[in-house]
Image (cartoon, rainbow, N blue to C red; front, side):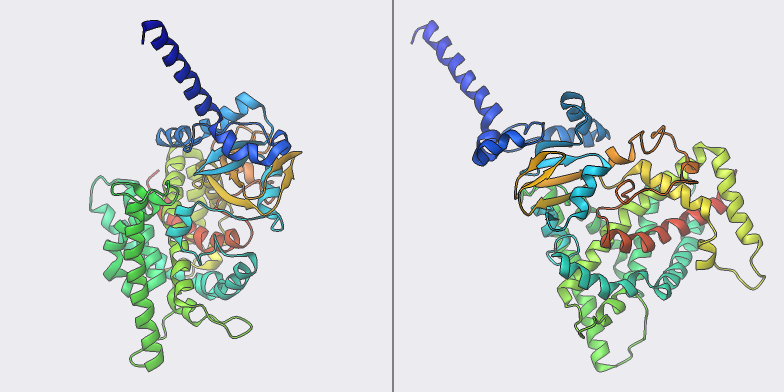
Length: 458
């Protein structure tokens, strides 16, 4: 073959490769829906197979996740909905309160659609994967154990015990890595709430396993050595084995009534919970519920508390106002009271605004995944049946039309502002899961931040 023919062959091969790179995802995901493809929202599906994941992961790696969605907005305009290929699924990304509401609140058209890796790691009977009716049943079963007033008051005592222990420990350590210690702190609280006395014995080993599990929750489902999903799957298996052992032991003690203490930790509440038909949760449901709340409470509360503390240190005038609120509560206590109470928690309106503002700025959960149950239209654009819809929380929380000067830490913005349902989404869901998470999770943040504020110097 002469040089000219070789050059032509190489050029032709490059053109074919270019066509494949540009059109393979279109051929696989858009062409099959025929003329409806012209009703899809603007956007692009990235590289073959991996789609837009490379640019998404790069943005997250360099702590700039907003740049991922910003690139769609800059290229296609502020439509509030864009097509992409995410986690192996043809998807739309929704970015405004209106489009988010349509995806999150319409259970007739959308259902949970989490990536396969997340479903496997969180459990197929966890709240994020089960059908709506089963979701409601489990919510009724678990609400008293998790958010009942007796439960919250009991958790507050646990939190205070751990806070006193941890603050004393930190004071003797000199310099500490604050986030690491906060994560250990919150993990200890959660384990104590879930497992009671068993928590101390298993806490150290479980913390390492849970960290590995959390890192794999939104990773690609690549079950090969060295990949985050494989490490997370191994970690889940170890966590499940520990939780199953505890559940088995508790059931045995209850059945035999031998030295069984009427404890009030969460695992007892979940085992004893009964719905209106007399049905109880099976072991798989209990374990997957525990895994879900570990995910909801450990990483998010640690990061939120850390950033709330950082923001307070960066804004002395806000810190002084928050500290004055705490000192006033302590001043009004009767001499016989030494502990924080639920009544006092309700008397912290400014701290509540500090935590809400910290959650808004942090937006620990980037997105939630839903799946279209049938062809659906949002803002005139088609979301085909089976496609995923990703609700992008940060775009909502940083929308200047809702939050003026959105990058500014300003707790006072909440003074006369009550956000609509999809204008403030601090968790991975709205409705049932968010309501259940919010009270118990926010109690942790309130208590921890309160102790830190009263312990910090001006």
